[in-house]
Image (cartoon, rainbow, N blue to C red; front, side):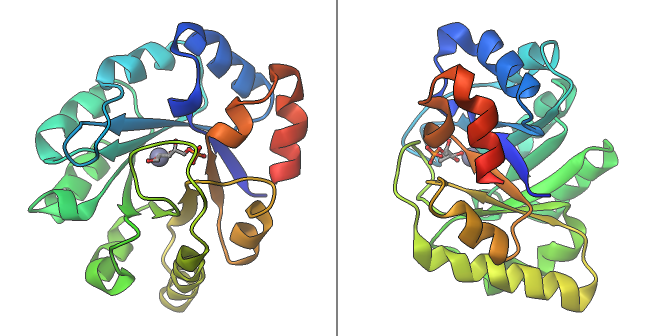
Length: 215
Ligand code: DX5
Ligand code: ZN
């Protein structure tokens, strides 16, 4: 069954604890936390302190998506804060292999995210080493953007590469996911859907129904 990773980027920060508890109770498997630095992307969000606080609120998988450059110097703090998966953009640092190793050595899952302008062939040497690959279906930086259908082929290619090589990464899709494109993602091989505005703009009473319909 496809997993749902609600993105708290679209949450009301004053109600963050309540939102995360509610998403947890309504069946979300992961909580997607977008870390933006105002440099790799033109927006600033959270730091490791938010991950640390949310760790006390939920035992669901904390799926931390780093949109920061450089990456390496912040990894330890995100590990120590209680992340379960740390995903970064490999072009944002000089030595992605070393970063993957730092994460994996701490016995948490390492992931890489594919910016729409990055080709699979540029980073496929990393695929055997990671447990999650995020296909970005918007330009990273903001919630509420339109799903880029021209990125769907990457989901399909990653699924094929995984089968052909016996790799074991999960394929996540992040950006503009809604009830119209969730099935396309699933049919092409996605395992996880990061969902921000489509879910969090709704009344909490409907979360369970929306999460189930996205699946
Ligand atoms: C975009 C972020 C996404 C974002 C998704 O840079 O990585 O995780 O929160 O939000 P929606 O679903 O609104 O596109
Ligand atoms: Zn994200």
